[in-house]
Amino acid sequence: MTEVFPPEDNQGLSMRTMTHIIYGLFSLGLISAGFLGLATLAAIVLAYVKRSDAAGTVYASHLDWVIKTFWWSLLWFTLSALATFIFIGWLTGLIALIWLLYRLIKGWLALFAGQPPVVEA
Image (cartoon, rainbow, N blue to C red; front, side):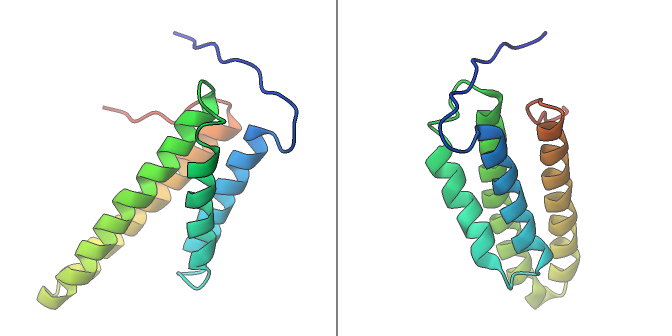
């Protein structure tokens, strides 16, 4: 089944470019091992701000994908930090990092293909 999305207006940066910027900022914060954590926060704030502009387009699912990825990864990294007290936090943190990388790569590749990111059941 193919979804039909309305065309974008050409004012300012396109939503496609904006979504690439959001993925890039999020990835920059991750690659820098938190030293550029403000880049990740900027990506999330930008995703929330542009969410209403993207409504009804394929980019809305990408923004939701990035926002959900951020909040779930924050939860898992926080729980992993707490679990370091019982010496399993490093393992759960590594698993959370791999999951986060998977979500970023899968979402960004779907954006390049012009498709919404899809969760396989």
